[in-house]
Length: 287
Image (cartoon, rainbow, N blue to C red; front, side, top):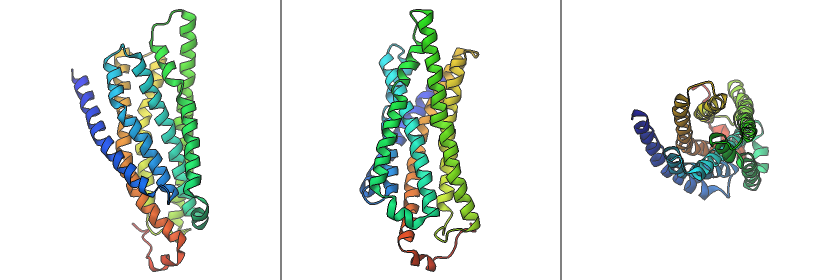
């Protein structure tokens, strides 16, 4: 009984903390979405997190009521969509921050909210395309197969889908995020840009990166373990359930970073617009 009780407690904590936090971010970022590109990123990410966390009760229901196949398919599809969209958006946010450091004036003139909105629409479309069939394939693997051939076909398709989601939704985005983050670290250490008056943005990015990917790493690990069929099913079921709950906590932590990063982005863009104001600011890189 310890496992269900702990699972219920974690779900309740994630739901009650994630919904109001993301609602607040939706309101704050929504008021600025027409003014800055960063507000578009944060608002879009908050929308995805809000949708994801709202469907947490459906995931809870699908785990304890095994007859609801439609609930398992829908919750798995939403989880996959959130994973892909968050990874794509995090890449865009990291690149945007890197451009602010490398070419601040160019970023102010060209990284407009309209361009950011178009990119968000493209990321939504890509995420839907990658995740649309994932829930159905996962359900077909866990359901009784009518024939051995159909089961083997579905199993191969699920393995391919899990491999794709690991590469496209985790490994490749991690590499693409670390490149601009490394540039920002180097720029901060060498003081290439006088607009970097504080390491606050860098510290937030360095905190957001491991937080996001550590929340999703167990999910991918247990996805591979489940299709390997070399471990006890009971242990895998408990581990995959906790890994799934952990992904919801990423949606609870993200709003805190949204608000902090957005405030710093506003200051950084204002300095890019008025470079003369940086003369009156002392360097704070020695924190």
